[in-house]
Image 1 (cartoon, rainbow, N blue to C red):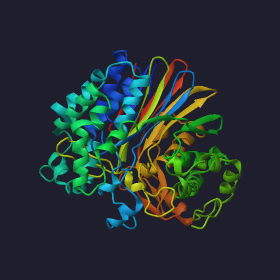
Image 2 (image 1 turned 60 degrees about the vertical axis):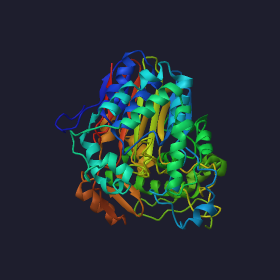
Image 3 (image 1 turned 135 degrees about the vertical axis):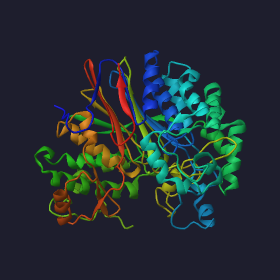
Image 4 (image 1 turned 90 degrees about the vertical axis):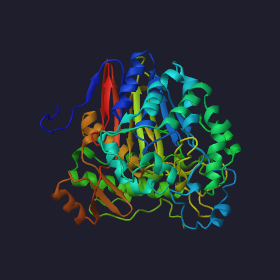
Length: 526
C-alpha cells in the first residue's frame, strides 16, 4: 500500500494505453496522439519531438537516439541511431589539433554526425501510422509560439548557464541577458520549428541533405571540425535495427541495446547481483553490493565497450558464467575494493520516455545531447544545437573506443525492456548520463527483489559509485552513510538529484506507470 503521508505520488494506473515522460507537455502530447488513434511509435515520436523543444539542454534534434520496440507477442527489436565521426576524424588528425588526453565536450571534435533524426524517421517508416506533420504539430507549435519553462528544466538551465553562454550563438538563444530563465518564463525556438517542418515534409533528407546540412557542416568547419556535406548525407542512413542483448534476472528477461551503448554494463551489474539474496540484505549491504558490482561493470565498460565493429564478441564474453563468477568472487561484503578486469589485461544528460499502446505494443526510447546543452555549439542559420557524444572517444592508439573515421563512440544512453515468459512486461529507462547502467540495476532490483511499486521503485533514495566516490542523495540516513564510510567508501552527498526515470509495467488489463519525482514529468493513460 502506498504511503500517502510520504508527500510522494503513487503509481499511475490505466487500462489500455499509457505514456510516461519527464516533462508534462511531452506526456500530454503523447497522450493526445494515442487518443487520436496513434500507436506507441507515433506517440513516442510526438513526445520526444516536444521534449527537444521544451527541455533543450537535455535533448535535441542535434543529438543521438536509441530505442527498444516490443510487439504485443514479446518480440523485441533494438534501434541504434547513434552518429558516426566524420571521415576526416582520424586519431592523428585530432591529436594534431592539440588534443592529447581527451576531447572536451565543447570541442567540434565532440560532435559526431547527429543520429536522432535518422532514427526517428526509420521508426516512423517501419512502425508509425500517423503522418509526421500530425505527429510533430505540438512540437512545431511550442517551438514557433513559445512554451513555459518548468521548475526542473529551469534548475538545470541555471546550472549550465555559464557554459552555454560561452558560445555567442547559443547564448543569444538560451541566455540572451546573461542569465538562465526562471520557472514560468516563456521561451521559443522559431528556427527549430522550421527544422521540424522540414523533417515532417521531407523526412530525414530534410535534415541530412540540402541547405540545412550544408549550413551545419560549414558551421562545424568554422569551429575547426572535419565535418563535410558528404558526412551529413551518409548520416541519413545511420540508424539501423540490431538484435538486442539480454540476460535473465530472477525469471525476468532484461533486454538492452548492444554495444556501442552501455546496456551491457547494466546486465553485468544485474548478473553479479543475482548471486546474492538481495531481499535478505540490510540497506547498507544492498548499497555496498550495488556499488561494488557497479565499479566492476564500469571498469569493463570503459576498457572494452565500443563500436561493435571494434569490440566484437564482448557481450557474449562478459555475460558468460565464467566471467560473472569471477567478478562475483571479487566482491568483499565487508570492504570497498578497487575494480579489476576479469582477465587482468595489461593495459552525461538525456531524456527517456516510454509508451504502451492499446494493441499492447511498447517502446522504450532515449534521446540525448550527452552533456548539458551538448557541445554548446549552435549553428545560427539552422538553430541546431549539437551534441557532445564524441567526448566519449579515447585518444589512445589501439583502444577499442579510440576516435576513427566513421566510428561511433561508446554511449551512456540505454533504453530498457523486460519480458516475462515471452510477453512484453516493462518498458523502462533511467536518465542521468553515466548513472544509467547503475540506475537500471537499482530500479529493477527494487521492483523484483523488494516488491516495490513502479513509482516507489524509482523514487527511492539513490546512490552511485563512480570516479572513486560513492555519491548518495541527502535522503540517505546519516547512519547508513557512516556504515558505508566504515567499509571504505568515500561518501559524497549529491548536490542535485541523481538521474530520473520512467516506466510502465504491463499486466493483463492493467498498466502501472511512473515518472520520476526528480523531474517535471508524469505518466498518463486511458
